Image: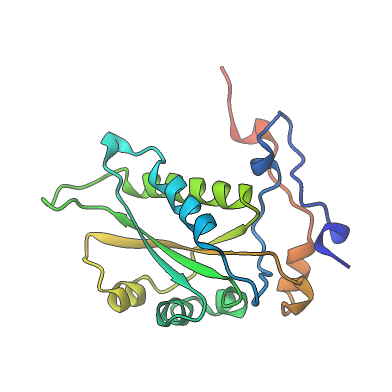
Length: 195
């Protein structure tokens, strides 16, 4: 049974949205035999580059590692056990780091927020181009900082897996069940008060 047969992947929205937003979801099943071409990867990173930031500070840095490279292996080794179970099948892993202090030592209060916007743009562009993305918070930030020689002012904040959708049957339980579970969100009225 395919993922689409098990549960709908299209969001049940209460207002019209762009197709890339309605269809975007975060799978854990990636095809371990398919890579990402340079154009699609560059487009995703370009979308991140052009996302908004406070005072145009662009307080983000990305470590981009393709499957089969030493950098990719290093990122996988620093993932939490739960994420190690599936992320190594992704074509690319992207470490997103927020520059929380500038070169002069000034705090960048909105750096993590701005980084989140950049990763969101990356994710939507990737989905538009036929890829899937799954953002993770379960990883050893200090391990990644050390492994990649990041200065203290850069805080590894998330890791994003990118790739082509794979067979959910290849996942161990309970990940397999979660892969086909219906998508849900709180009602709009629960999260927004419109005056």
